[in-house]
Image 1 (cartoon, rainbow, N blue to C red):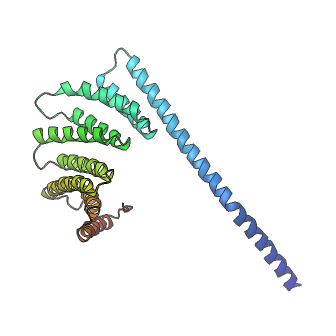
Image 2 (image 1 turned 120 degrees about the vertical axis):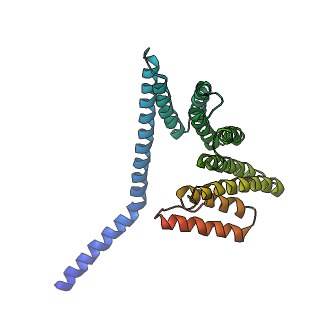
Image 3 (image 1 turned 90 degrees about the vertical axis):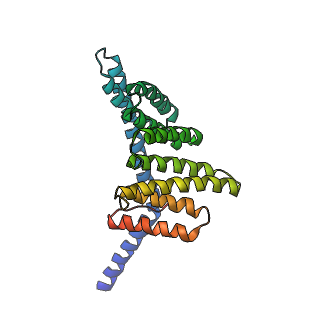
Length: 247
């Protein structure tokens, strides 16, 4: 009797396993589909709210310019997330023109931040030439008005370097690729020196630079040097309990 019961239980479990195994792929796809749909809905809803807030502030005759810029930044972020790059670029270009007159012959933080963000959107839209122009403008501005070892300059050098790396990656000719990679490497090393002068060579910022150096040096076939940068980046990430997916 016990043997018969055990066989019945085994049969039920086996059937259950077969059913679960057969339906798992479709159930998994369904769950993933629902997740993606919820994410898409969230992005859409956030964009609609940002557009409404922006228009409401613009329609207020007593609005402050700072409120417009804050609402516009939020709207740009939502457009960027939705990959509506052209609309985001248009708004950021408008804001660049508005922020430029704020401070003449001195450091203009609002203009620099707006410009940097514009460069980021151009980069993500794969408008690499435009990104390079904008990043170079921010770097020139920061070099003119900030101290030579200001960490913001290291940030600018990193941004410009990776735009050059992306441009180089598009060339089929090895010589052209390596020319761009070499420029990127030079900028990254300059940025790293600035971080070292500020005693932040073991920070997350430094880790990002080391990972980027790993890429541009590796793609110049300097494998041993690239592995050195990779090891350093991994060591920094590990020391900070930072999970970083290798590029």
